Length: 299
Image (cartoon, rainbow, N blue to C red; front, side):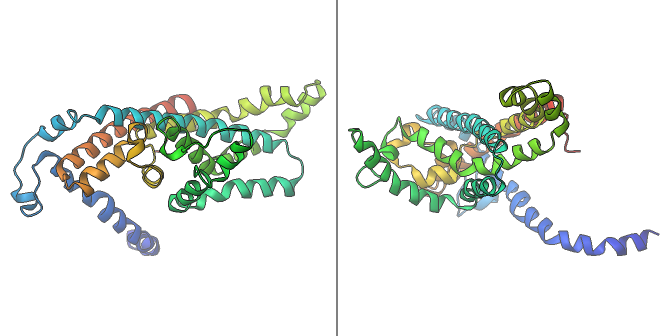
């Protein structure tokens, strides 16, 4: 019985094996390198020969002159992305739900969904061109109304707004699909009953559509709490410059500079480990809230 069952499931195990090995090598294997955070690591001496310094790297990390500013930038940008990333897809999905011409609706869905498949290397180049203070189309448009050119990617005040808006532009189409799926699950009989009772489209949306979407909205909102310290390395790395470090430097870019540019491997690992520890706590809290508020469970 057991042998026949194993024989039947062998192809499935073989199919999963490459993915399992990749996760094992690239996700679990590097965990051993976290010991660097507690050492004065030297490439020549490697793990075994590098002296153990305990919490010294963490103590030094919190004494860095810009560490709290970097943490503040990370939290601010991440929270603004989470908030905008929830509101915009909900509004767009509600608007698309009111469109009755299916071809037009599908065309709009395709157009807003396409940026999700483009990397930030491509989109970064596009944004640099369209936001250029000399030849960018945005500043040319503002110039028609007499507005002086704005260096969006080199202005401390404007840079966080550009990061948040461009991230929403790239990802809101993908999130909209989730909410459209939630809308498709609402019983049409509820709308028919509302029409009979004299409810207009606005009242139908307030009393039927939004309550029907509420479980999905609560679920995605609570699960997004785990990303409070993930402000988007790929995006910011392709857009920022030393001019906007004051408002655009985040934990991931700081780790990149400390580890790869300055070769302070122990310090960079300590900063990354601190972020991972906080993220684990936030993810645990978010899944607990998702279970309590939306009855969402992984197992």
